[in-house]
Length: 109
Length: 111
Image 1: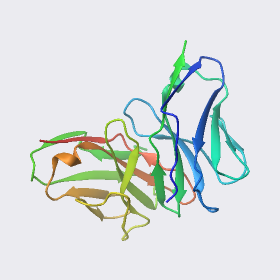
Image 2: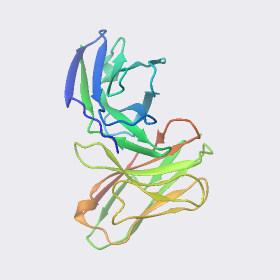
Image 3: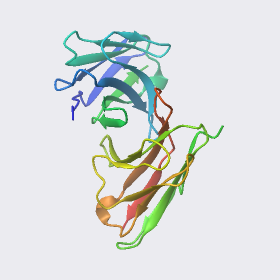
C-alpha cells in the first residue's frame, strides 16, 4: 500500500497562504490522494481529493505533480480556525484509506 | 441528521475485560469504517464494511471483531482487552463515490 510522508509541523501567518506538502512516491495509477484535517481531538474532516488533475473547492486547492509522486494542499487565506493537524491520505482500492502521521499547522496572529 | 454517533464517549477497562463500541449513522451510507488513533499518530484502519452484510480487515485487525448489524450500525468488539488497545477509536461512514464522515470518537483506556 502506498504511504505518505509529511513534515511534522508548520507555521503560517494569518491571512497568508498555507502550503502543505505531501510525498507519496509509491502511489499507483488508480489511487486517489485525499486531504483531511483534525481539529483538537475531534473526528477528521474532509477537505479535498484528486487523482491526477489539480482540484479546487471552497476550502482549499490541491496541486498534484505530473508524476503523481507528491502533492500540495493550499489554504489560500489561512485563519486562526485553520490551526489543526492535516493528513494526506492515499485511498487504496475503493474502501481502504492509509493515513500518514500528518502535519500540525499552526496559524499565527 | 445526527450524522455519525458513537457510544460510549469514554471507557476504562481492566486487562482481559470485553466490551463493544457502538457506531450508528443516519445518512444511508453504504460503507462504514473503524479506526484507532494512538497519541501523536495518524489513524489506522481496523476493519471496514463496504455494505450491509460484508466486513473486511484493515491494517490492524488483530484483537478486534466487527459486526455490521444493518445498514445503520457497525460495532467493534474487544474480546479480551489489552493495554496496547488503549487508544481513541473513530467510526466513519461514506456514501458511494463520496468522502468519509467521522464520528466524535471513543476514548478507551485499558489498565
